[in-house]
Length: 160
Image (cartoon, rainbow, N blue to C red):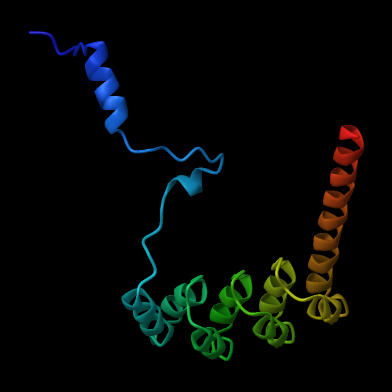
C-alpha cells in the first residue's frame, strides 16, 4: 500500500474551492486574525490593570483595547515599567503621552520620544529634556523622519 495520495483534477478543484480565502498581505502578522473585542476582553484588561504584580499591569498598559480610564490610571502607576509600557503604546491618547513626556523616569520619557503618535508640543519639550539619552532619542527620531522624507521625495521625482 502506498502512502502517496493521488487526487483527480475534480478532487483538487473541490479542495481548492473549499479552502479558506488566504490573506495576501505582505505583512505576516496580518495573516493572523485577532479575536473580536468583547466586553469580557475589556473586563479582563481592567482586571490586569489592577493586579498587584507590575508585570501583569504592564501587559494591560500595552493593550490596544484598554478603555481610557485604564490608560489614565496606569499613567499614574507607581512602577516606572508600567508607565514605560504605556508610553510605548501607539493607542494611548495624546493627553496621556503629554503627561508622560514630563515623567520623572528617564526611560518613560525615552519611550514617549520613540512613540510615533506623540504630539509635536510634547516632542519639543523632550528635545529640551535634561537627559542626554532622551534628547538623543528625539534627534534620532527626527533624523529618521528626515531620511524618510528624502526617500519619498526621491521616489516622487523618479516617477515624474
